[in-house]
Image (cartoon, rainbow, N blue to C red; front, side):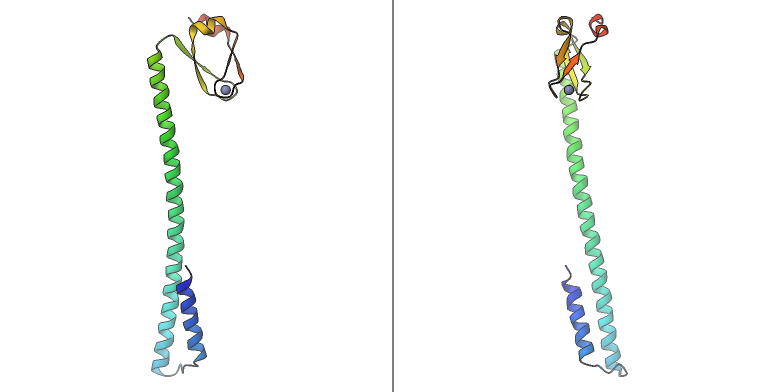
Length: 133
Ligand SMILES: [Zn+2]
Protein backbone atom coordinates (compact mmCIF):
# COMPACT_ATOMS: atom_id res chain seq x y z
CA UNK A 1 0.00 0.00 0.00
CA UNK A 2 2.90 2.34 0.75
CA UNK A 3 4.72 1.57 -2.48
CA UNK A 4 3.85 4.91 -4.09
CA UNK A 5 5.00 6.77 -0.98
CA UNK A 6 8.27 4.83 -0.85
CA UNK A 7 8.92 5.41 -4.56
CA UNK A 8 8.37 9.14 -4.13
CA UNK A 9 10.61 9.15 -1.05
CA UNK A 10 13.31 7.44 -3.10
CA UNK A 11 12.88 10.05 -5.84
CA UNK A 12 13.08 12.79 -3.22
CA UNK A 13 16.34 11.33 -1.91
CA UNK A 14 17.66 11.12 -5.44
CA UNK A 15 16.91 14.81 -6.05
CA UNK A 16 18.74 15.69 -2.80
CA UNK A 17 21.67 13.42 -3.71
CA UNK A 18 22.06 14.88 -7.16
CA UNK A 19 22.49 18.32 -5.57
CA UNK A 20 20.21 19.91 -8.12
CA UNK A 21 20.77 23.63 -8.40
CA UNK A 22 17.61 25.20 -7.00
CA UNK A 23 18.47 28.56 -8.46
CA UNK A 24 18.01 27.37 -12.06
CA UNK A 25 14.58 27.19 -13.69
CA UNK A 26 15.01 23.45 -14.36
CA UNK A 27 16.03 22.83 -10.76
CA UNK A 28 13.05 24.74 -9.39
CA UNK A 29 10.70 22.84 -11.68
CA UNK A 30 12.14 19.44 -10.81
CA UNK A 31 11.85 20.06 -7.06
CA UNK A 32 8.30 21.35 -7.52
CA UNK A 33 7.37 18.19 -9.47
CA UNK A 34 8.73 16.00 -6.67
CA UNK A 35 6.77 18.03 -4.08
CA UNK A 36 3.56 17.60 -6.08
CA UNK A 37 4.21 13.85 -6.40
CA UNK A 38 4.75 13.68 -2.63
CA UNK A 39 1.40 15.40 -1.93
CA UNK A 40 -0.37 13.12 -4.40
CA UNK A 41 1.16 10.00 -2.86
CA UNK A 42 0.03 11.08 0.63
CA UNK A 43 -3.43 11.87 -0.68
CA UNK A 44 -3.73 8.45 -2.34
CA UNK A 45 -2.55 6.78 0.87
CA UNK A 46 -5.24 8.62 2.89
CA UNK A 47 -7.87 7.63 0.35
CA UNK A 48 -6.99 3.95 0.39
CA UNK A 49 -7.05 3.95 4.21
CA UNK A 50 -10.51 5.58 4.13
CA UNK A 51 -11.70 3.04 1.59
CA UNK A 52 -10.42 0.16 3.74
CA UNK A 53 -12.34 1.57 6.72
CA UNK A 54 -15.44 1.84 4.55
CA UNK A 55 -15.09 -1.79 3.40
CA UNK A 56 -14.79 -2.96 7.03
CA UNK A 57 -17.88 -0.93 7.91
CA UNK A 58 -19.88 -2.38 5.00
CA UNK A 59 -18.76 -5.90 5.98
CA UNK A 60 -19.93 -5.33 9.56
CA UNK A 61 -23.29 -3.99 8.33
CA UNK A 62 -23.64 -7.00 6.03
CA UNK A 63 -23.13 -9.37 8.97
CA UNK A 64 -25.63 -7.46 11.11
CA UNK A 65 -28.15 -7.61 8.29
CA UNK A 66 -27.68 -11.36 7.92
CA UNK A 67 -28.25 -11.80 11.68
CA UNK A 68 -31.36 -9.64 11.46
CA UNK A 69 -32.73 -11.70 8.57
CA UNK A 70 -32.08 -14.93 10.49
CA UNK A 71 -34.01 -13.57 13.46
CA UNK A 72 -36.90 -12.47 11.24
CA UNK A 73 -37.22 -15.92 9.72
CA UNK A 74 -37.15 -17.51 13.19
CA UNK A 75 -40.01 -15.26 14.27
CA UNK A 76 -42.03 -16.14 11.17
CA UNK A 77 -41.57 -19.79 11.92
CA UNK A 78 -42.78 -19.42 15.50
CA UNK A 79 -45.83 -17.41 14.46
CA UNK A 80 -46.77 -20.06 11.86
CA UNK A 81 -46.19 -22.87 14.31
CA UNK A 82 -48.37 -21.12 16.89
CA UNK A 83 -51.26 -20.69 14.43
CA UNK A 84 -51.02 -24.27 13.16
CA UNK A 85 -51.17 -25.76 16.61
CA UNK A 86 -54.29 -23.85 17.45
CA UNK A 87 -55.96 -22.41 20.48
CA UNK A 88 -55.08 -25.12 22.94
CA UNK A 89 -51.52 -23.86 23.33
CA UNK A 90 -50.34 -21.19 25.69
CA UNK A 91 -47.08 -19.27 25.86
CA UNK A 92 -44.85 -19.40 28.90
CA UNK A 93 -41.69 -17.40 29.19
CA UNK A 94 -38.75 -19.23 30.71
CA UNK A 95 -37.55 -17.23 33.76
CA UNK A 96 -33.98 -18.43 33.17
CA UNK A 97 -33.31 -17.74 29.47
CA UNK A 98 -36.48 -15.73 28.55
CA UNK A 99 -37.23 -18.10 25.68
CA UNK A 100 -40.92 -18.47 24.85
CA UNK A 101 -42.17 -22.02 25.35
CA UNK A 102 -45.44 -23.19 23.81
CA UNK A 103 -47.27 -25.59 26.07
CA UNK A 104 -50.46 -27.60 25.63
CA UNK A 105 -53.01 -26.38 28.20
CA UNK A 106 -53.83 -30.00 29.09
CA UNK A 107 -50.21 -30.57 30.08
CA UNK A 108 -50.30 -27.40 32.18
CA UNK A 109 -53.23 -28.85 34.14
CA UNK A 110 -51.36 -32.01 34.97
CA UNK A 111 -47.93 -30.71 35.93
CA UNK A 112 -46.32 -28.43 38.52
CA UNK A 113 -43.31 -27.55 36.38
CA UNK A 114 -41.86 -27.84 32.89
CA UNK A 115 -38.37 -28.28 31.52
CA UNK A 116 -37.30 -25.46 29.22
CA UNK A 117 -36.36 -26.92 25.80
CA UNK A 118 -33.81 -24.17 25.34
CA UNK A 119 -31.82 -24.07 28.60
CA UNK A 120 -33.18 -27.23 30.30
CA UNK A 121 -33.90 -25.48 33.58
CA UNK A 122 -37.27 -26.04 35.25
CA UNK A 123 -40.10 -23.56 34.79
CA UNK A 124 -42.65 -23.52 37.62
CA UNK A 125 -46.27 -23.43 36.41
CA UNK A 126 -48.22 -20.74 38.20
CA UNK A 127 -51.73 -21.51 39.43
CA UNK A 128 -53.26 -18.60 37.54
CA UNK A 129 -52.12 -20.19 34.27
CA UNK A 130 -54.05 -23.34 35.12
CA UNK A 131 -57.21 -21.42 35.95
CA UNK A 132 -57.08 -19.60 32.61
CA UNK A 133 -58.61 -22.59 30.84
ZN1 LIG B 1 -34.98 -21.58 29.42
